[in-house]
Amino acid sequence: MKELVEIIARELVDHPENVRVREVIQDMNVVYELSVHPSDMGKVIGKQGRIAKAMRTVVSAAAMQQNKRATIEIV
Image (cartoon, rainbow, N blue to C red; front, top):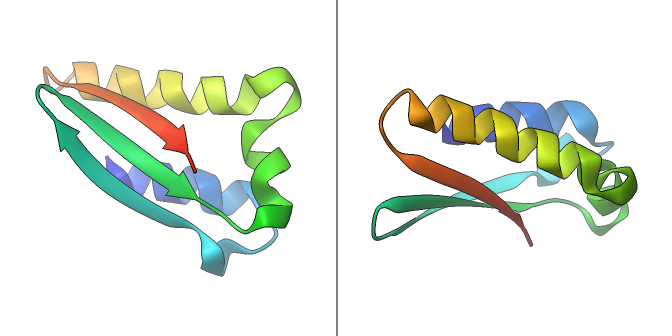
């Protein structure tokens, strides 16, 4: 799952070498903390947060197949 977030983020940004994903397990939830180059922040978030929301939807759907809960936080 972590690799999925990383692959999607690398395709969106201008500085793919600065994409970092950290997995944090909180109770029954998994939180993926995504950090990118400051100039790429807008590309990952998108207009009105649409890209970030789409990424969260994809990760959530993939996690549901494994009977888990997952979300993405952009830091």
